[in-house]
Image 1 (cartoon, rainbow, N blue to C red):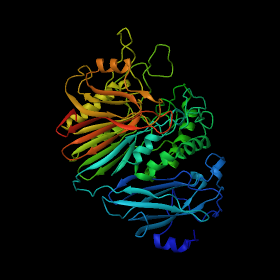
Image 2 (image 1 turned 60 degrees about the vertical axis):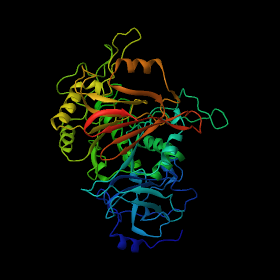
Image 3 (image 1 turned 120 degrees about the vertical axis):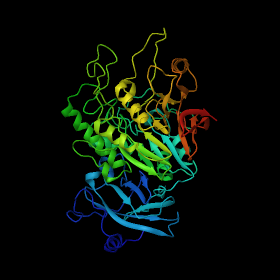
Image 4 (image 1 turned 135 degrees about the vertical axis):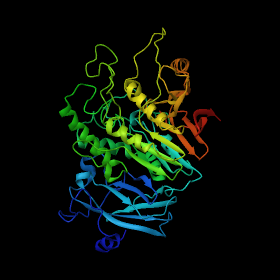
Length: 526
């Protein structure tokens, strides 16, 4: 690649993409000669608006080495956005500094583009070939009513528990506007794994984590690098914008606000949480509004697709009360559900309530853990403890959500969820004690990409869940993802399943298709 004129680029782009008040001229620039591809983690886009989107990359020529093989200096990175994949019609160009303080990641908020159309983007750095090319679509213009929006729903991708063929299949889905990633992008655990992973020849291979359980910023950066180097995950990012959230494993299993599940003092856990949140920001295509602060980051946000869809992306981790105790001997937990218990926090609850006042055809509540009540029974039929990490552990908060939906006379609320490693489709009842009564919303809980290994299509547990939960229409324990085809008069959801993930080459099939109309929260299998 030929050397580019840095000052000319600055002049044409209107200046560097400054970040957090740091002066790009306050430290030396590096111009390393790369022996390895600096774009080994690929590129990504996210959070599309009508006039633009975020584009991301991280320079990491040796992803699993200390500092990913990068010098401790800022490195100039050029970016280009074009109206065609061959870059014959480049419409935006600029330069940013990939800084060691942010693991040499780059977040560019591209603006001033046309609404509702595809664009292509890439990054360039001296001493290396250009990055892969990513594709992204802007959102429809405000006030317009598009014929259709097509979204993917996916997440929960434990690296040691299976291959990422589902991501490869999702990358080949036609006409995707975006993918909602509901979290568990990484898993924080150590190297031990009980899952047997094989290659295409049937030989057992090592797909374990490259390190023990992670705590420090460098630990989390290394874990993201291991996951993001996977070619199938990179292909999915290159194919469409991601609207990313986080769940528990981006920090620690079942964490809640300032508490972990082990009873660590808040002062110490907050150190770990801040490191995890910085690493999440460094590796996700999110806006500067999601930049981490010492007291946390604001992940919840809202995206509009014209008058067709309003998408409310929630954070069910950072502000919640501690989980309910599931057994009498537990210590690091909450003993009972009181009127002040919350899973969203007061500010986010109010924000969601305000945002639900709109004239969109559909409201999509995109969040992490199951909202629908889940009745669990032991083999003898006696009640089992509630699933305390889901909305079942916060029934008062769920009642407030249902009340908000009902007060606004909304019949068009669809909830998208992950976490449970199953496909689970049903409705959120108006009253927990009347599961087969009136419903407030429909819910599509998406299964995992790999977490849980191959899984099974049927089981005694599945049959029991369906027997005790009449508001459920479907439950399946295979891996895969979901596709939402959203039109003004009908929402269709395709449930995709993989026949295997513990060996590569898994085949994808459509398990079921459901339809919802905006006039009533009721599911129809089609």
